[in-house]
Amino acid sequence: MMPDDQGMSEEWIVRVHGKEYGPANLDTLREWKAEGRLLPANDARRANVDLWITAGEIPELFSVTPSVEAVTQLTEPPVQVSRRSFNQILAETFQIYRKGFFQFLGLVLLVLLPSICSQLITAFVQPPQGSNVDVRSVLAAGFAFLTFIVSIVLWPVYIGGIQILTAEIARGQRPGLIVVLNQAVRFWPRIAALCIFVYSVFFLLMVFGFVIGAIALAGGSSLLLIFFALALLILQVWMFGRFFVNVLFWQQFTVLENAGFIDALRDSRNLARSGRDLPWFQRPLWRGALIASLWFAFVLAVRLGPEWTTLQNYIVKFVTTQDPQTLLQQLTEAQQARGFDLLAFTLGILEKVLQPLLGIAFVVLYLDSTTQLPSHVEPVIGAAERDTVR
Image 1 (tube, helix red, strand yellow):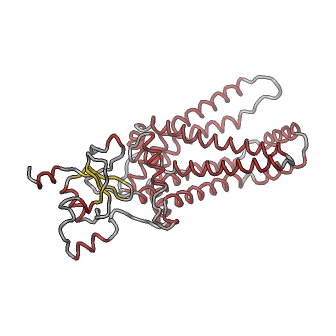
Image 2: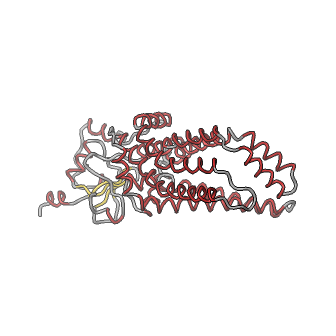
Image 3: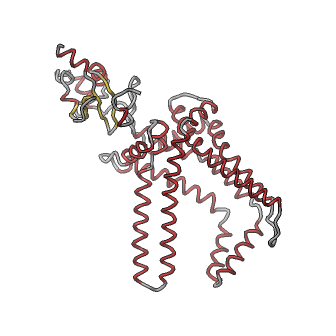
């Protein structure tokens, strides 16, 4: 076999900004080089070898002295990297939401309608006084529980649909809701498993926080217990923040990259921690944290706004009432006296209708933070799949 033929038959995997592409033969690598997508400093390895070298060391790829125009092109950043400003990410988020409003609304109604039915039934069927058992109350409680289960079952479909629909609209497509749902259902088992894991960890961390609060209250005037609770609180905040960073992009990798359970978590962590050479406000970690903070601030405003007067009354009763049993009875009576709060119910629906904005923003951030692929190559997404093209 001639050396040229051997070079043509060899396949290479290249790594750009932490993402791997290939396998690709020498002709494909030359095309990427000509397009400015492959630089001599990029990492590369043979498809059947684990040792990484630089693309400049690949025989007959960068060995020829390039022209001045080619040198200028190669020294520019890869054309597939698009660093939008944070304002541009938010603007594109709202544009995508506007373009696919009715499809996003359909996804929202998928999980919102069972919840609305449950709230309405619970609000208009009053619980019986005393120990008497009311059949209507039992049926209402059973129906509320059933709708709760339905919402949980449909939640992974909602998550997958948001990722797929956002990515398609970002590419200029307008898929129908049924098409999106059919594609999202395929990811249900994997998304459901990751939801159980991610939400369970967050729940346990929150329980840990309540335990710390109980320790602080039980400590009273004990300085040692107060310092111990403070140390535990610092540990809890650190654990919460670290886990939040690790799962920042798990939904995008699970659906858009078709990554497995472990691969999605690992790739999410790697992407969140990438961009260390960029200014802090351009890193995926800080942008994702800011997007989440903006959304949570909006949710707090929507939920606490109508309840502010009630919360003030609760705080006053908590401070002035010494007997916990009396306090609990007063709070229960106040809650029953309020009845159905139309304003809070309406604002809750508004929050759910706007909730896709959070998922859209993370998909846009994900697309901006990852290296876009050449049109004829797809990424290597897993260790078991690195020697085949999907």
